[in-house]
Image (spheres, rainbow, N blue to C red):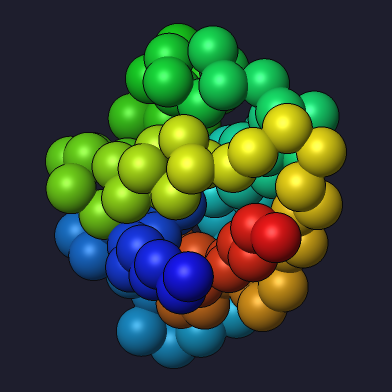
Length: 101
C-alpha cells in the first residue's frame, strides 16, 4: 500500500526571503524539534507542536503541517522512518520529507 501526504513542516510564505540565504533560526529549530519527535515516535510533541519554540513562525496556519499527523498515525510498531530532503529554502519553506516503512 502506498499513501502519500503532502505538506510542509516549516511553511511561512509571509516571511519568505526572496534573496535566498540561510534559513531563519526559528525555522531550523522548529524543524529539528519535529524531526527529533518523528524519529523518537513522540506523537504528543508533534500533536502539540504549537507549544514548541518557533512554531508560531514556522506554522502560521496548520493546513500544510497536519498531513504529517495522518501519515505518522499509519506507522505500525517497528516500522522504520527515514528523513530526506531536509532543506529549508528562502528562509521559511521546509521541504523535509518523511518515509514510513
